[in-house]
Image (cartoon, rainbow, N blue to C red; front, side, top):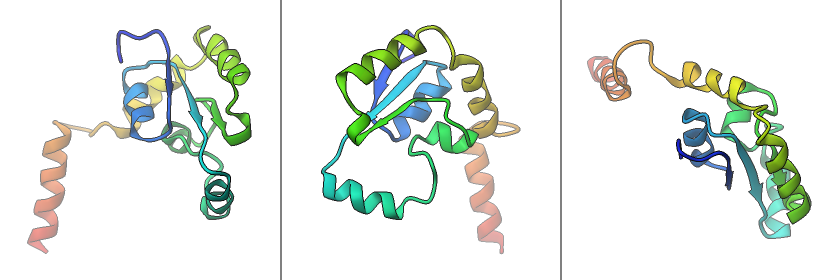
Length: 117
């Protein structure tokens, strides 16, 4: 991922992984129309991409359902190759990195705290 100039990805943890490598990304996702109709009524956030949810703003383009077209994908990839995302993507690492140590150490500390209760 880190060696890539840009990525086209489905929404999910891959978007977060790409953000950690500061790889500009475009999210493209299309599902069954009935499923999309149900999901639009269940999702409480204005975004589906974890990066956008964490930053509470649209940083990574989300091309969903009817917006997931070849023309839109190409247009957004060309735009994001200009480097508009990379500064914002730096914020993701700060948001999800532990203040000290490795993530596994932080997870172990949290488990130990729960067990001691």
